Image 1 (cartoon, rainbow, N blue to C red):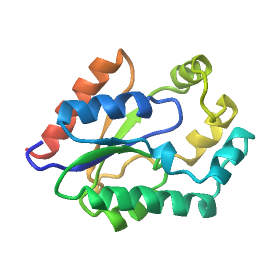
Image 2: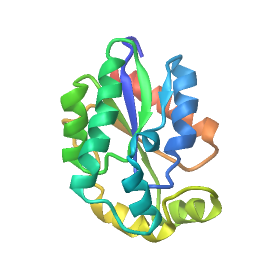
Image 3: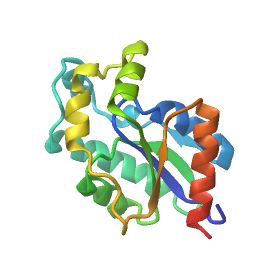
Image 4: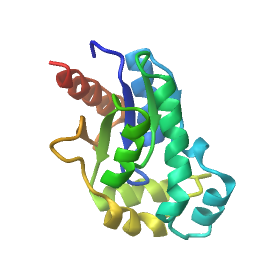
Length: 169
């Protein structure tokens, strides 16, 4: 990418945001921030109990991510955030207008299998259906790209870098 963008790695739980995000940041030579770290403890407790967040829960979290992205404007960075709805992405863009989105996509069976195989994460597989029900894919007028998560992380990252570079072409 010719200009150091802030890239928001988005998608439903289990698509690999926490795996691909740092790999992408390393490939782009910019810092990475884990979006889950911006959640207040009440959000983590709610999700750990299998209760989906509502918009009132998400706004402060999105604002905190947006503030981090704003601080990286012109410098570049990668941050993860589910950013499932257009309104959430609009909120992030309100803080960081130059942000671009990398939407990690995959089939529900693949994502469920990956979620079932991970340990130590607060998001239970039971919330996956609510994530897919909430998801609003990137619209044509939104700066970003979608990349399928099939294959090893290195291949996904390479496809992501290539797709993001095409945004600048």
